[in-house]
Image (cartoon, rainbow, N blue to C red):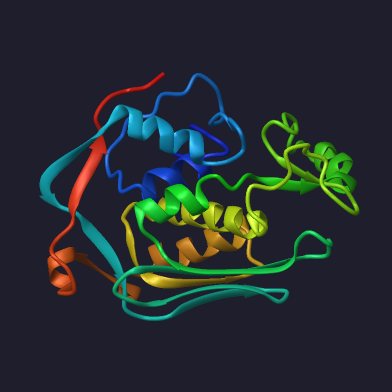
Length: 237
């Protein structure tokens, strides 16, 4: 929420914009939330590729983490450590035979994100649906926009897109929440069973203490030639 305007379910589109290297884009909404589409980031990736990307001459500026930051609560943690790339390590655990413990460790690139993270869909468990709807959540959930786990299997006839689709979607969400910092990050993020609230707490810690990071251009990192800013070239309806 900003200036009295509240918009929900922004994490998927922000995750895609962040990971595909888009610094500038106008997004117009006619409702209070971003469309869920198929529950993943893949449709947004396709729209960006269809629209095309313009490269600016102005160098992109990054937030490079210089001091470790850690947030924890009830055995769940998320931390960010200094690094000269955007690295992610995610661990999840759900007591279900098709999920259990899953882990993913990667250095993010647009190509890897588009093929390995963006297609992962949001998910839930059928025995939690009534409680979540009573809380005003997932009111538009269906098998067309979410993976639904039954107690022993999966309700979606097409099955999973990845054996570890849950962990991959958690990475997608994590990136979308970190995008709220406003600049691409150079650091190693480690999430242990964390969720949106903890991601937001990490962002808040960083944004309220400028001693934790420095703003640099890619050539200042001195590991590769400078990256360039990009933007969406055209609006796609």
